Amino acid sequence: MRVSIAGITCEVEGLEGWALGALADQRFAAFLSSDPADFTARLAVREPIRKTDVDLEQPMVVMEKLDDDVLSVCRVDNPFEATIDFAQRIADVDLNENLYCLDSFMRILYSILLARDGGLLLHSAAVSSEGRGSLMVGVSEAGKTTLCRQGFETVLSDELVAIRRTAEGFRAFGTPFWGEFVAGPVCEEADVAALYLLRKGPRYEVRPVAVGRAVMEVLGCVFFFGPSELSPSVLELAGDLVESRLRGEFYCRPEPGVVPFLDEELSRNAS
Image (tube, rainbow, N blue to C red):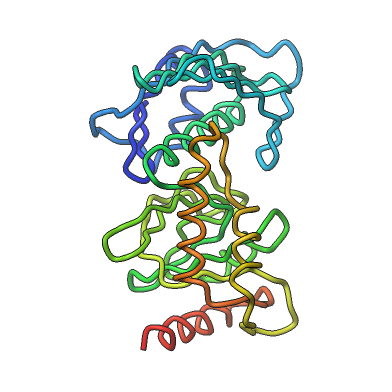
């Protein structure tokens, strides 16, 4: 299985003969690719010795730097143990036969690969209209999935979106790391035109917010597991994204009227 997310392609080996292989093909279907692999994950799938309980929102991860370009990464709840060699572009992974274990490993791997390539993964709903994307950043239970169900032209993600710099600014990429939105995942991308801090409220309203406060909140929504030397680039990207694209706190209620409201917001900010 070869998966491409935000321009980074990973060959996933070792799924043959396991029921997990068919589940993975379905889960990552929109992101399967024939592009040359930038990285290879060699899986040693194992049958779980006990029920696997994976928390995708707050994984308990232990990371150890074995060498300049080699990391040991494992989860305390034991769904996987991995040695990631960035110089050789190979990860060796002992993995429980469980789709959420594979999903958890891929999230962590891509959080590092994106950071090494100047990008990041962000907890955000991401929607677009006519190529202009809006990010609604929020933690779990902020309403990201509910918002995405309201009939937008394109939904990139209701959970984790990849962000990369471009010559014109920033681009958002859909990922297979979705929440509960039944229509996803789809492989879409859009230029980032606006960023909002998502709030629940009785009516549609965008309120101003201090940039410093917004930066701290967005940093709290960055999904990143990697060595400390990558932190400055992640911090810089998140800060630049907020400073250039922040529109305010977006208060909304879950109904389809939010779609034309956001379209009008984007048009007003573009003019």
